Amino acid sequence: MEAYVAGNWDAYAEYYSDTARIWRNSNWTNTDGMTLQQYIEDLKIPFETASSHKIDPQIWESIVNEDGEHWVHFWGVWLGHNSATEKDYEIPVHLTMLLVENKVVLQGDFFNDTQVSLDMMALALEAGEGEHDDDDD
Image (cartoon, rainbow, N blue to C red):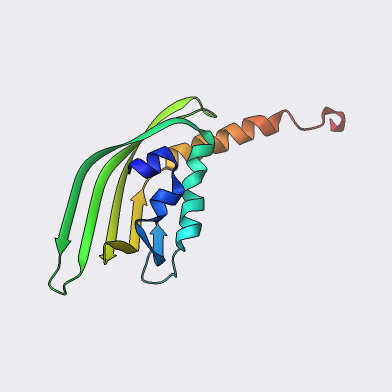
């Protein structure tokens, strides 16, 4: 989490297998998921408009199931200020990770960023309202 919050993507990538597959709010039983590089590029997007952000970790859980698989679960809250919307956001986040030789090989991220998306769409619509030509009236 420290590497993520700092935007240190090289350090962040060290926790993942080169062949890791990641799913963000999607079903991992019927899609291929993202590669590590695609995932990191996706993680960078909030950094473009967030003037501040942090992760408030709530619960970490590490288990080895009956098949000998090592799973790590994380529940927390992404706290950030979006400089484009000038709003603060608190987004609950859940991560589920399968580790092999202490590297993430599968990961599912689950979060609801609907309010941020709606606010960004409203901002884009507001910006577009001033771009039409009044000569057509």
